[in-house]
Amino acid sequence: MVAEKNLAVSLCGLTMKNPVVPASGTFGFGIELADAMDLNTLGGISLKGTTREPRYGNPTPRIAECTAGMINSVGLQNPGIEALVADKAPALRSIYGGVIIANISGYSVEEYAFNCARADGCPAIDLLEVNVSCPNVHGGGMAFGTDPKSAAAVTAAVKAVTRKPVFIKLSPNVTDIVTIARACEDAGADGITLVNTFLGMRIDIRKRKPVIANTMGGFSGPAIFPVALRMVYQVAQACSIPVMGCGGVRRAEDVVEMMMAGATAVQVGAENLRNPMACPEIIAALPALMDSLGIDSLQEIIGII
Amino acid sequence: MLMQKRIFRIESNEGVARDTFRLVLRTDGAVAVRSGQFVDIALPGFFLRRPISVSDCLSDGLVLYYKVVGEGTRAMSEMTPGTVLELLEPLGSGFHPEKCREAALLIGGGLGAAPLYLLAKELLAQGKKATAVLGFNKADEICLAEELRALGIPVHIATMDGSVGTKGFVTDAIAAVRPAFDRFYTCGPLPMMKAVCAALDAPGEVSLEERMGCGAGFCYGCSILTKNGPRRVCADGPVFDKEEVLW
Ligand SMILES: Cc1cc2nc3c(=O)[nH]c(=O)nc-3n(C[C@H](O)[C@H](O)[C@H](O)COP(=O)(O)OP(=O)(O)OC[C@H]3O[C@@H](n4cnc5c(N)ncnc54)[C@H](O)[C@@H]3O)c2cc1C
Ligand SMILES: Cc1cc2nc3c(=O)[nH]c(=O)nc-3n(C[C@H](O)[C@H](O)[C@H](O)COP(=O)(O)O)c2cc1C
Ligand code: FES
Image (cartoon, rainbow over all chains, first blue to last red; front, side, top):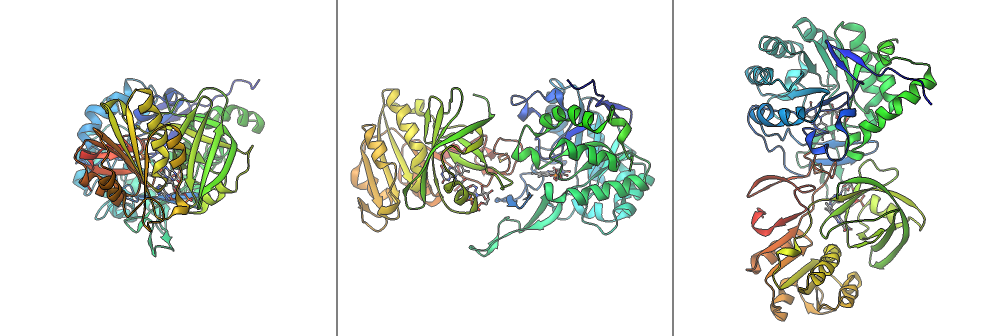
């Protein structure tokens, strides 16, 4: 028997029963998985990225397998912000008591602000995660996350329209992650989510064409874990706002490692696609792992490195 | 049945036609899968699972047919009896045999014949008649014809090189045989299914393929645009009404 372990963490005044959160885009709107598992074991759920208008997304193939990971080019398929606030988030709230995170995208500073204002008015949503880092949409998305000035402009604009905690989700496709994270902190961000996917590509050498219809897509999975961990560490060192760590997490050990690097909560992305039960399995494995590592409370290990 | 992660053991894994294998899997406890549904197989060393249609559902097992087309299916072909595999099952919507009134036409292209076997069993159990028309490139690719005949249904073959049955496409064989049917069901290469839907007036169902991420409806990796808007092949399909598909 493992002695009682404290998995709870506190994030911007919200108490999470554990730090494990399925990452945006890898868990739908949560409701899709309600029959397959007990959602209430999850500390939080980050919902599919949402834009002002409904989007169909990119042509298929949208998925390419890689060694220790995958490329996706879903391109923010989503039913639009009104469906999120009127339908998806309330539906999840009615069956789920943990932290509900709305993942917000946009093509302009105005669109980000509009979407966040709508999400602010939705009681089902606890926290806003503003995605300035999607590599899969042209003319927006990642452009905001690769330049400190525009990342700060988005942050300031959304902070002006909401009282909910705002996390800015950054792209790893940059030379200096710290400068961008600091710019967001200075503009009022309550936290930073790190990282989104890396721009990647595969070629079908028999067909002599890219596997992904859109040629390039976002690479993620276990292969990116050390790079994501490094960025979490750098940003946690440089900033005083909390970090949600994301990238290549597939087991309880990775959660502990991300937290030691400075993450307050830890998101699991691509692993959900190969194993829909990944998050509950990771949470179930945490107490025994903590016991073997001499950890009583996860809150204690955040940023101990 | 709800989707679940389940351990199966390989009972047999044998070549039955060119590059084509028949995989029999057993598990502890009852298995309930309907025709047109699929399983997603975790392969050691590969990041994503491999979606494969269910060809037959045994009380405690599954029969699958697969073709070696890449590294994952090659690795599967080298697996020996006793090997343990982890599957997600059952996935997808499946065919609707109950919508057939009296007689069904089952049209398979290549390994598209696989899910038609379980469908034929379901139709017969509902007291309906079925005829199968199967198309292959060459004689050495033919599979499932004998199994379908063993169920007592007529099976007509079309081969591109004319080595067996009608020379040409399944549509040529259908034109030659002129079977009676009120509903058709088809699985195979997209151009074949498109030609079949264009040639046949009756209501029909088609089984589509798409590259998949989760296989279970929550990643939007497999979306297609249909007459009814975006649909996920894995969860809203893989079987769709022919009217729904934008060819
Ligand atoms: C609903 C559904 C049912 C299927 N049923 C069968 C079946 O009964 N028998 C059978 O032989 N094949 C079936 N397929 C196709 C089968 O999934 C692919 O042939 C297989 O995944 C190829 O894997 P690979 O590693 O050998 O090929 P690789 O090309 O090395 O695979 C690389 C990646 O692409 C994916 N991929 C490659 N081809 C396909 C394809 N045609 N469809 C979807 N994903 C693909 C793989 O899953 C993998 O993620 C089905 C596909 C779907 C979507
Ligand atoms: C299929 C898929 C869809 C995704 N969609 C989104 C999205 O809508 N918004 C977003 O911020 N990130 C999205 N991401 C990125 C993930 O949330 C996560 O940041 C990234 O995949 C890295 O984590 P991982 O290595 O655990 O996958 C998506 C990732 C995948 C694999
Ligand atoms: S493969 Fe994930 S939604 Fe279909």
